[in-house]
Length: 348
Image (cartoon, rainbow, N blue to C red; front, side, top):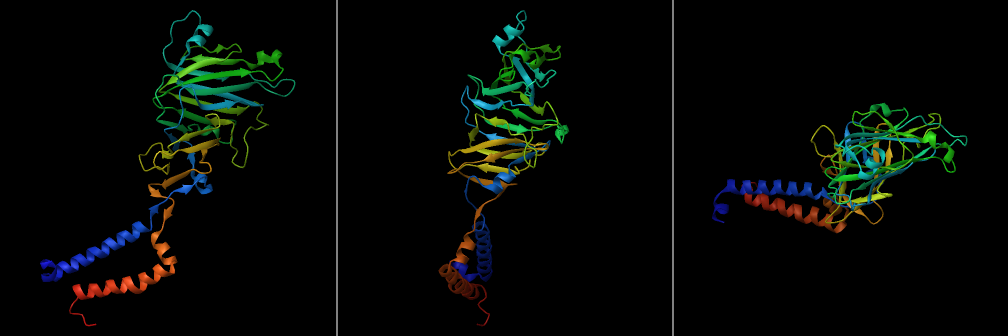
């Protein structure tokens, strides 16, 4: 108190500090992050990952052991091929396909189409894929989706790569003839390739595989390129589903693949809430997800800055009583206090 009374410089520094603090509070009061009700069209428009540049990271998805991570049921004119890293055949499949071999080391495995032809009905063989969290495996901390192959373009196929991190996933894949087309099973043969070995013609049976700390690369393309399997103005392929039809998670990010910058999009729940991610779309040069369902809320950030803010200053300005008190009482009173204490020699 004595320093306040004795030192004019101290009073001026204190007043300047008050103004700096007030300016900071005004800025913070105009940028208070707020939750947004989901789904939000502008948020969904941002939930895309550009090919070879970005990844979609689903944080802490709710997937119990044995539950679906991703699923696909093939339709007419669709061919599904997949390549696995750090994969092994499940024991029963190994014994059935390679009865005289010992345990196989984890490595690269591919499941690809042989020569596929439409049947007399115009239908084609249908491939189904189920990827589940393996029994006894670690919980999924995150699920990463991205694309790497620029040749997808306007060409024949659409791609998605799935990385389950440290968790182990179990795959079941099988290819069936069209309904009632048992005689056409020979046209539905698939090739299994393990490591650098020769491709093996598969019998018409399900194949079970395990992938631990590896990536799963899936391609989808039409048997007949004149009958495209891609829909909408962006020519997206939408037959691949996360989980059974959707997944719940603690958040979602769109991150750069080569730079450790702030996520381009970061959607988070408050407390222990969950948000739904669904409708996976595979484009020629991007992946896309829809975020949220009715009654869900989230906080969203773009490049580290909040997308949806509560503007306290704007609210004050729009309230006639608060606006009058601010402009007619608070500001003049503060100015008089500053003049009296910091500039006492200025005449009124």
